[in-house]
Length: 285
Image 1 (cartoon, helix red, strand yellow):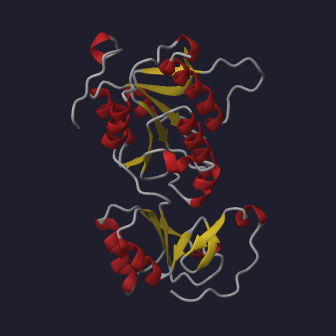
Image 2 (tube, helix red, strand yellow):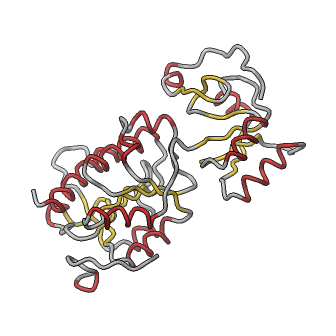
């Protein structure tokens, strides 16, 4: 990554087949449906060996491949090999889950999830900040699994003027139609990078002069924290928060003061509160 210098708060100064009649899906599944290659399927899934083969040939970004557990035969072996070669996560799962994901249409043991938009690189995000003449503001999602939460965070990040968002390749939500819907269109205006390792990305950002803050309980109040320079905010997973290694690598931990009986916000709500304060400091409102 090319080194970039920022005047204020530099780190040196501080620390296949036509669709058959599908079984009716539960209401919560029908809400998440979107148009796929063979019709309407939950989460925009691309189902069947022929459809997945063409998707791989297209070169389009693919979030993951679901493959039925058991012995792999025929063309599915080739599809899995191509996915692995491209670094696409391949996840073995039960036939029942594949059936439900495909809306009970024939899936031939394989389903792919294509990204709703092209991913960029972390360098691209830093370049966006440089082009705007602003200190970088980056949101890092460390294992957000709920697509509605990810979409809401994307919306918050864009509204607060963030230059980009970073998500991991594995064990997290990708850019599915559900995420797009939850973002209320903000996904079209925010650069999103997908990385193999969040911890390594944090270290790389720190080398670029970006201060990285973990949003976790027990940290310094966000209202007493100086966010005015280049910074990245790490939001942890819904169940476990920021991973131990990533938290250890961060420059500081910041928290939202709580005054009620419930001791935490939903992750997307917390992101809104934190990002609003960071944006205020960046734009001196």
